[in-house]
Amino acid sequence: MTRTFYTRLIFLTILSLFFRLTWGQLSVENSWKIGENNTSQGTYLKTALSAYYQTENYAFNSQLQVDAINPQKRTLSGFLVNATRKTFSQKIPLSLSAQYLLLPFSTTLRESNFSLMAKGRAKGFSYTLGINFRTYAYTQQAVEDYNIEQQRLHENWGIIYQLGYTYISQREHWNVGLLLTNYDDFLINQDMNHFWRLKGQFKVSKKIQLYTECNYIKAGVFNSSSNYFGYYIKTGIIWHVN
Amino acid sequence: MARQLVLFLSISLVLSACDYLDFKGMVITYTDVDERFDASVAWNDANPSRNLLSGKDDYSFFIISDSHLGGTVNINKVYADAIAKNGKGVIMIGDNCSGNKTDYDMLANVVEQHSTIPSYLLVGNHDLYFEGWEHFYTYFGSSTYSFSIKTPDASDLFIMLDTGGGTLGKLQLQWLKDLLATERKNFRNCIILTHNNILRSRYTVSTLPMQEEVKVLLDLFLQHNVNYCFTGHDHQYDTFTFGNTHYVVSDAIKDGYKKASYLILNIKDGTISVSQQPINE
Image 1 (spheres, chains in turn red, yellow):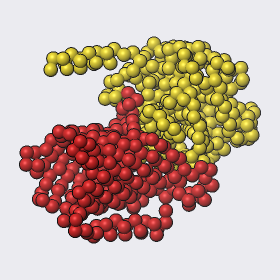
Image 2 (cartoon, rainbow over the protein chains, first blue to last red; image 1 turned 90 degrees about the vertical axis):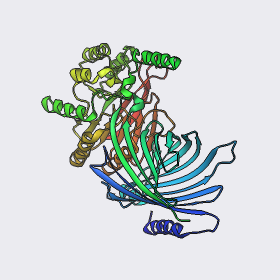
Image 3 (cartoon, each protein chain N blue to C red; image 1 turned 90 degrees about the horizontal axis):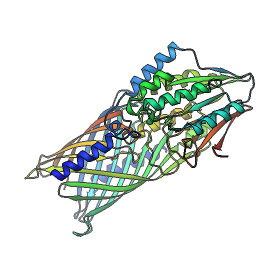
Image 4 (tube, each protein chain N blue to C red; image 1 turned 180 degrees about the vertical axis):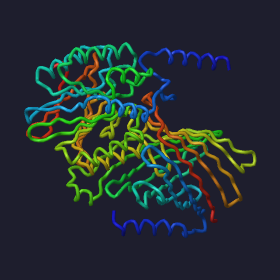
């Protein structure tokens, strides 16, 4: 991926922040993620900028993630675009999303991931079920430098899931929830690698929301031989522009 | 309410009574991977090296996985084949037994009976069940180590990694990075063996390492020219290439398994080739 490509990605995301149509809602989110795991060589710190645009039936989202502290010393570490068709009807309380995720891990390796997800809510419970198609690829520069025999590997038909319960306050000013999932905005684990998320959200005003999440990750759970892997705390602010 | 309580208690009773699967391991970590690594390093420092000398340039190793003792018919067949064909050693890449002491006693007996050929073992997830690490360590020592085989032509490096808990852990990962950075250049071929698969080329419910760990390993394998990575866990043979590393997933060798097979790693004229040998042929 060239600098021109990344420049265009950044431009597109910034452009989406200022895009405004009279019949849609534009929201902007900034989040910070701090954590550590068995590979991070200490604490890592990431930030993401997201733009959401939604109408009555559709929602679009693009996000950029930047690393402030990470052992790969890479700045731009994630790009995501998502399109959602909201609930079809009262009888079918599901939304359907298509998502493309690009994760430049290092100067030699990147991951791209295409996923389809169905999401729903019922009486405080939320659920997501989807499939994803992952591709690991060594960069073209790496192909030349290392004379690589096989540049890409596809992992197809991975399962994405999330199951949780959220308690919403009577006035809907705040909520708190506990979820079991294998994915986050810039992370999609294989089916058997899940983690727990405790999340709280607070409405400061009609236009501003704050949230915080604590995520705890344990490896090998479905091997019945588990071991601590890591944790991260994510906090963010959402601004509904119009 | 009473009905739900009875159901919960019944399920708990069944699960706790299982001799084969240790469900407590989903919640409790018996021994942390960093603890096992520290113990492995201490054992490596206190015991003679496992390096081998070969008078010939060409040699072979016999690699087995998921023997799940219990039964010893298949594993004995592999040892007999390895000895008959002058293999340099038998490498067992995890899930060697159930974790129970009686099965560890059986495994140690098998290895002892075939002491004319070196055996190299590491732990898989099953080996850690029922606090099995204590027994593995007593009989076999470390689960993280490297050994080399020196031929008249060159030397090859074999690295054994402990992924029994689903992760390499911080200490073992750093050890691997340091080993590759300092030693890889001194060897012709570099072969990594561990239990858990790093990647999958087809859908499987077997647990792989976390995404962050997979990518760190993929980068390391490329930068340090890891030639082969052998894994087990999946009970289904598979082979594929990514980057410049050839990945081979071994079948299970356990008694009663219809597709039981083992791998023969051949080095001939410095080049590695791997053949799959069904147990019943």
